[in-house]
Length: 377
Length: 87
Image (cartoon, rainbow over all chains, first blue to last red; front, side):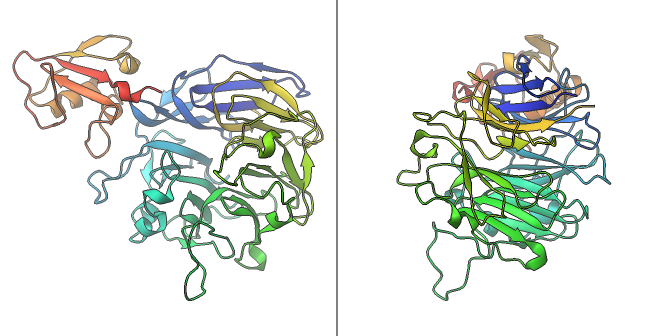
């Protein structure tokens, strides 16, 4: 059974297929060449449905669906869109994030957009509706901030997480805006940002913490220990154990000082809740957002963030000034776990020994926005 | 009326560079195009009824952003992918 990688890039989607041992790979010609593809995800529930969030530069945002492993695609009959005539005049610029719903709701998907909006499909991505409890919440415009609280190409709603124990329990994150939680399927939301730093905002005079407005870059929930959340934030790496409360712990403080704990992606080991990986980037000075010192490396913790070890065997040891975007690093479910990441310079790398060594799979691709893995039926 | 379709939209028209559509207003023409080619309108007009940022509509050779505008007799609609949309 091969592993497939769904490589969403600035100029189209590419699908890579492995041999059974994951040591050799083939790459198909691109689909939707020229379109800005933000996320492509194989549904882990049926291992057949493949959704793609894409923006044609002129024609705006949409979602495509494939039922035949990416050979043919059909556009959503009603892509994610804000309510016509809504008072803030929002229109979706691009669909940024796709999350399959709970295992008990096989046709449900969630999408996050720019400007920040949450959308839900109940028919496998064919039609989408706004989640009014979030998009139209009277405080939503305060949560999402102004255009100075956004990434350069528009704010992002991302990291939509569905608790594997409860389809009504949802998390989402926004850059910027912070992390929010719903326990009623998106009808109501509450911020979940205590303990998370906001170096880009003045301290509050009364000494209290900001409840929202933070900049989580990526958040993941451990699949078998769902109380364990990991977050890579603009201001550090965090861990949260919900069973112990609602205060995030900045575990990135244990990272080497010369590397820091800024980055985009974080991924959790699919079985061990104490193991996670990050890909640091340079967040000093002008914030180049490149590999620190031009020497890319993953960092792994195996003790829930108490310590981190550098993993760079096989990666360039100098003059590699790329980084890895928040959706561009993923794992498979094999044992040992395979990790995959795509770079801003169009390379795709893998490790099939949990980071002990890395191999270059492909290069010369467009800027890689997202890498996801699946094992199609 | 004759509608000149840019390359970016020909996936919706079966590759045809020119199609015909009917309507008394620009909006009605776009609705008719969407009826013939499902999904067409949303790629040109956003959910707030604004012409998309990197699309230009020319009616009878004149740029037109007002969907309520009437279609002059004999006019053509040319849809253009604006230079600003390339990257």
